[in-house]
Length: 129
Image (cartoon, rainbow, N blue to C red; front, side):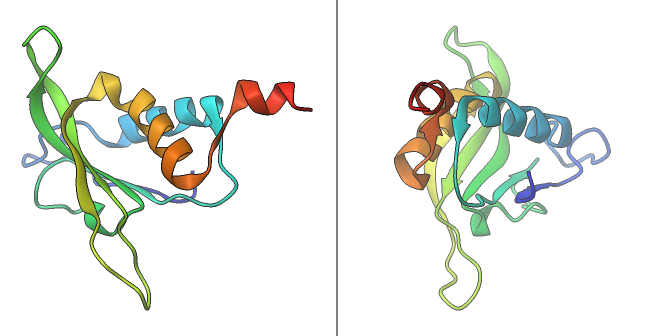
């Protein structure tokens, strides 16, 4: 939670394409119930390409967009960026996946955390104790 950043989103910004603050909290809480990660992961959300949430410097960044769901219906979505860094070895993250419907973000973040950040699924973690 401490590495979470979100712009104001479409609730208070006329340029934002998607809602960010409540969604960022909800996704972070849901993913936290699914996996355990032993290091901080910076997740940044921004509602539009202006990138007030600075998604390109996040470990995992989410930039709001409109996309289509599995039925071809228009819905809120995100372009997902991965690998941004700040500090002496700073560089911008790269586009990982484009046009992910917001309803599909939790399983994607779970997968990213396991594959790229060493997260452990909670059910496996509990059964090992």
